[in-house]
Length: 143
Ligand SMILES: *[C@@H]1O[C@H](CO)[C@@H](O)[C@H](O)[C@H]1NC(C)=O
Image 1 (tube, helix red, strand yellow):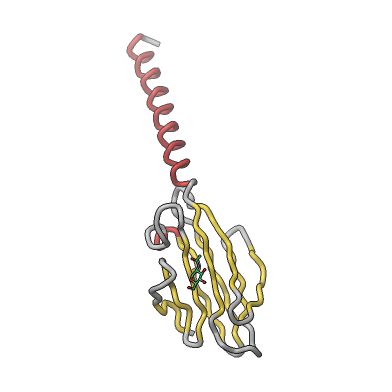
Image 2 (cartoon, rainbow, N blue to C red):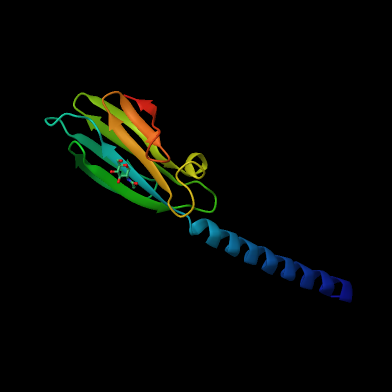
């Protein structure tokens, strides 16, 4: 190998190391972001509870039964490529609804601020309402 080739090799290795370092730093920043997802049953019906089952591609959080006023909570960390998705299948009496409880690309910027990152979901008679601040609600998934 002539000295030119040697130089290129050194440069290439250096670039790879820098790139890996940059990726690791970025990953740490992104990975530090934890999001809390809260699903509350705000359907005022003491007889028929809400059943919620949330999953991601790799996780099944299991079936939960929520009576009125009860809340279900889970949290997740943001992944580097923002591919994280938790979807839930809900049953209330004769009604059923699928909804996306956490979608990294959609929710990264709208669930709370600073270190308090909450995605609020409220199940109501007419659908699943979303709030990023626990006070303004939008029906994003009508039954
Ligand atoms: C959201 O608001 C409800 C009703 O005001 C309150 O009880 C609850 O503690 C709040 N949750 C969070 C995490 O701030």
